[in-house]
Image 1 (cartoon, rainbow, N blue to C red):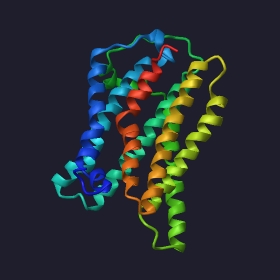
Image 2 (cartoon, helix red, strand yellow; image 1 turned 180 degrees about the vertical axis):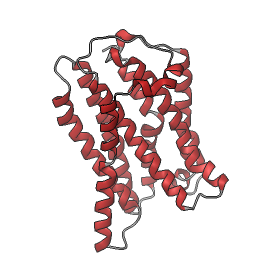
Image 3 (tube, rainbow, N blue to C red; image 1 turned 90 degrees about the vertical axis):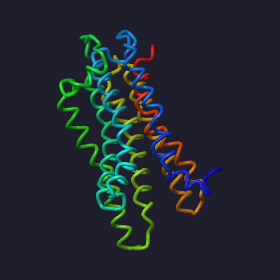
Image 4 (cartoon, rainbow, N blue to C red; image 1 turned 90 degrees about the horizontal axis):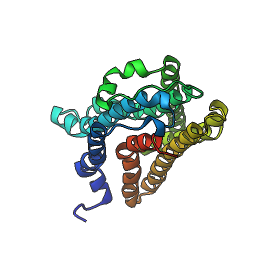
Length: 259
């Protein structure tokens, strides 16, 4: 391969910017040219929310790798504390988008009023009007749980073993989010979504299984990396694609699946 190691490829803009931007860019073109069917929606009352959600987070998917790589280098702060702050902020935002989706859609369970679908690019402009305050607050609070747990455990471990590699924090974070996603999938969804909304029940479980999958793959990759296996960086590219490139299209198209 043209790169000496998998780590070199992973650290390049080819993997970190270009590869993860292709699908979201094409997806935005798709959104601009296609209007979904309300009849096919898992929750007809949430069609406008889903359209706005898809546009906003597809755009942020494009912004994230550019802001965290080329832009920081252009500003000359790639190695400054600002870079770490930016990285953490986008990781937290990536988790927030999951909670926002599941809590907002769950709040529609049992709703029978059907809202007219709007043009997705215009729907994004009034996304704040489509949010439900309680779901938004719940998403914000839930987003803090895994970072708090991960940083707490990492700090405790480092007090006893100061030489732990930096990758340890991310491994703890990934395992914690796998646990949260599985708990939400196995307990919260069945308890929160009534039996009269089977499609929403299956949709939320599918979304959470998807999230647990990319976090589990990240964790497996980091175990390999911590063991000194260079191929761990190759494995890490797979969840990167699931997280950046395919999350929004998956959540959107699965929402409008006919069955």
